[in-house]
Length: 311
View 1 (tube, rainbow, N blue to C red):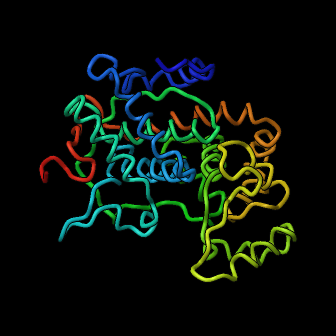
View 2 (cartoon, helix red, strand yellow; view 1 turned 90 degrees about the vertical axis):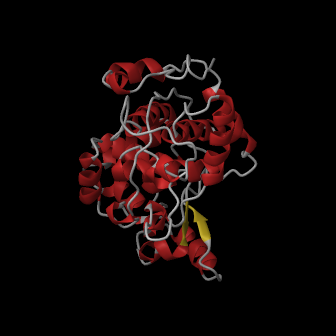
């Protein structure tokens, strides 16, 4: 039994409606080992310390399109492209982790655990492996019937703060949630040099970081750079601290520390990793409820890559 973190009671207080759609311990009766199976699979991939960033990105990219319905996992077939073909999703990875968890769950509890729940659980477990907070995930999601690359509209690295605020608001998330999710997700993220050339031209950027990045980016094959230069493999408040020093790599990360509507949140998180960790768990749970299908809606896929009707 996973220990109950202190933030669990906070989550219940703030999001009681979540329990009307999803449930903590949803699989306790139908598939008791479900969460431990997912955790074991994620742990088996832990030698690759980049899986946390990969799964955080997968979870975000899935939920922010048609809701947390595992539509991102569907493979394209001739004449029917899927969300995987959309530009922002071409670099999403970690699908093999979800596939392995699904394989083991189908062997133990056939047609019981949804792919969308596996994403949420695997992301939670990878955050813990990366030194981030432990939190409980409400489950009971079902998988969607559509995956259309034309509806993929995700924020880019240079999105202005007001546009980002509106995009998150459209998903039912407030400014606090936005700052928390962007900073937390990017705390273990990477970016290719081609995505932050605008920052290299910013005279306000920390000179030593600018010099290092220019040297790195002069190499071939569009190199990858850690977004958080302070603690790049740990889910923590490091990126907020860096942004206050003009050491954020992406334009949106730096803008959060400068914009009047978001700077107070950055200052608070930079001063307290405990506060960040508490808010991060709340924001992740909240994000995981976007557009969920429950009850008789959707389906439980046999394979996360294929709709049941096509399998």
